[in-house]
Image 1: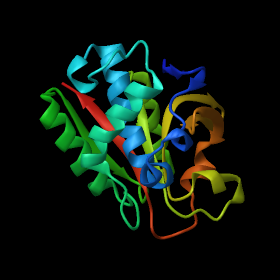
Image 2 (image 1 turned 120 degrees about the horizontal axis):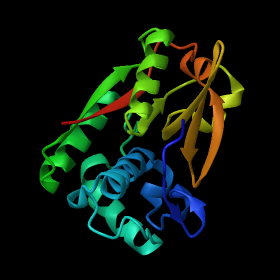
Image 3 (image 1 turned 90 degrees about the horizontal axis):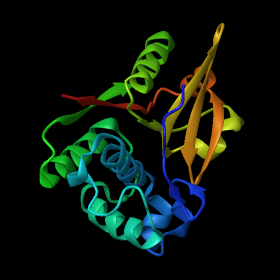
Length: 198
């Protein structure tokens, strides 16, 4: 099961490296996933209030302008947006300022057991919602590009005991083993953002 997405100059979503704002280039991953979520809801759910440009033709100029708006709510900080609560405060603040009253966001802690996380993720994708994901530290070097980082999960493939998830980051996508991703090996956890459309 995979969700639709958007392209920018032929790339799959936005490449954070293309920010000219150096602070956003280094630490804007939380804002990027919030921007991507708003573009998605504008494009596929008609929530035009969430993205002030054309969601069917996302250009670098428009994306950068939108990211400047989102930076007010989820701007980089010393440790980044390193908790679900910080992210939720920011995106809820943006939803409110944009006048969107029928989408809410909740956190799903990385401390929850894997089986519950897998079901929650699949339920979200099946319901047509992308999933922002935060991974802090991870003991598995396969995930070095996803540590202390927010990225999007936009699909899954389930085969027997394995669940692969489609992770989107830096204008690219890759399939990751969700169970291995979830088991970080550290006490400090990230987690998922769960959207609810009323």
